[in-house]
Amino acid sequence: MHVGQRTPGRLSTLGAGATVPDTMSETLRLTIVYEDAGDGWIVASIPEVRGTHSQARTRQEARENVIDALQTMLTPDEALDSSAETEPLIFTTA
Image 1: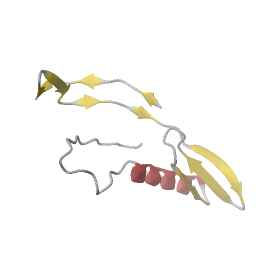
Image 2: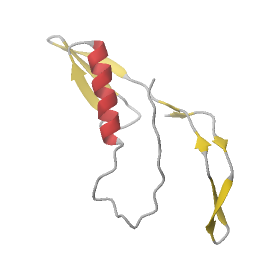
Image 3: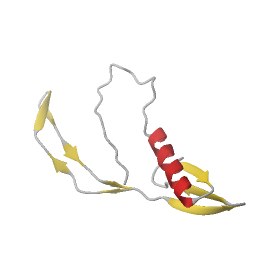
Image 4: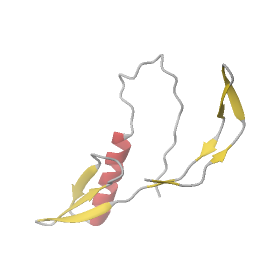
């Protein structure tokens, strides 16, 4: 996994002197690997995110499916403790 440029913004105080940036920008570069699975199927996977695989009959469909699989892998479980501190993260694909 390659992490690109990090751009910190203003800082917020969390208490006890801890601070975190209000805004931060990072570019995550991931790799889609395409493999011929035989019988007309193409398997796509993202090796940087274990368990992110999909398949389709065309490379474009396989790409769309593996991106959907990535979004599913990164979606939090509804059982997440609601008392936990959370921070929104927007992940955009090209």
